[in-house]
Length: 340
Image 1 (cartoon, rainbow, N blue to C red):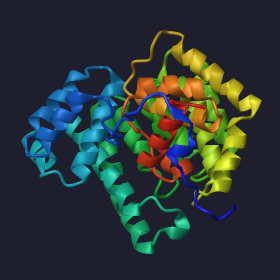
Image 2: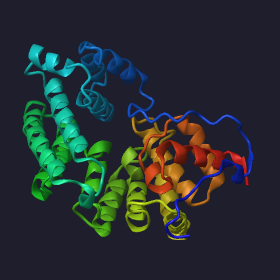
Image 3: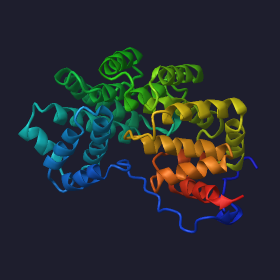
């Protein structure tokens, strides 16, 4: 019934095959346990482990970018001033500059909050704009001092949201793609910026996601960006601002469409064509896939994906479709691991 919040009763999901579901792990570090250890030390005041774990990624730009983002989130949450000490000790260190830009950008996002524009106060918008401007200055500096890493370009793209600066976004995107054409975070940011909830449209978003996926070689994470586009589309069209039995029903109908399932299958086939995916956001992509399979009523495939995922409930999109990140993850794990 429209307007009634969807409920998930594990007792209605069939006979269990496995009796012990995982404890959902929502940590943004995902399955990077070296990163988790470095962050734990950094937030007690020691910045050298953070420097070391980022350096250990070498020119694995996606892993480096992921580690910068997670450590930036820790600094944005006020983890002991360790980043300030790093900047004081090495003010010209490109990694510290990039991490500072990431931290300011993430603080800007936290200041705005996750509500729609209608639910965001003027004070929140002003703080978002102020912190985004400060982050932009640092991100531009990071782009200038590090001519190879795409992460500063991704951060610079993030700073363009406060004013919807399309020209600035596309310039940063182009530079980032020059450095690494198929960097996952950079290209996912392009899909996000051009979705209907921000500064684009469904058509533009799908064109960017599909174009990037088509151009990428097999096994690269961006081959899964069309799944993100489908999830963004369904969220905007069916569950924007609410989750009810009706929104779940409409989302299921969408993901059960043959054309949607065919595109999903093509993306997955290309993603796995080079062997089991091992890039830093593989767990995130598998979470997208678990949501798509769950909504598409593909229990067997969903079960296999959950086995790869383990405990990592890696995306807020569980909340967007099922009302809770941990709750949606667990309810669908139980469904996938039950006999229908």
